[in-house]
Amino acid sequence: MNDCIFCKIIDGSIPSRKVYEDDKILAFYDLEPQAPVHVLVVPKLHIACADEITEDNVDYIAHIFAKIPAIAQSLGLENGYRIVNNCGEHGCQSVKHLHFHILGGTQLAGRMV
Ligand code: AMP
Image 1 (cartoon, rainbow, N blue to C red):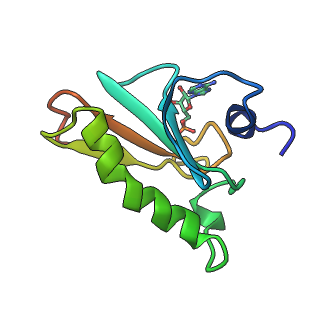
Image 2 (image 1 turned 90 degrees about the vertical axis):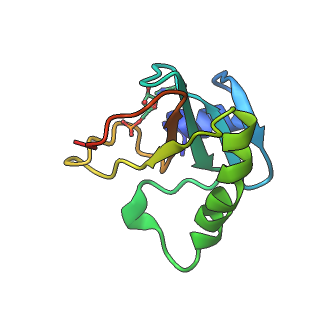
């Protein structure tokens, strides 16, 4: 996707502070952190949002969740963290490339909204 910020981060044409990378996924620090630790994990395949997860691309999502524990450990989140995905307008999704926020480094609020 030519106009997708996260595709440009994946191809290196927009810089990012990388946390983890392999052939399927990239994790990098959020530009505007909302917690002491705020990292985004994205599939290298352009999937616009959670509504576009299918049987054909779900291996990317499974891989993200298989890697999150090690990513969280590398970030020092041994006391826990929150995984957030915003989908669509009501979910306040601002970047239309599926991504999971990992938020932690402090006691997070009990309510999510
Ligand atoms: P969402 O609102 O769920 O779509 O989240 C998009 C996230 O992407 C926000 O937390 C932004 O701060 C973050 N973001 C946008 N552009 C960049 C960028 N170039 N590098 C890192 N994070 C970004």
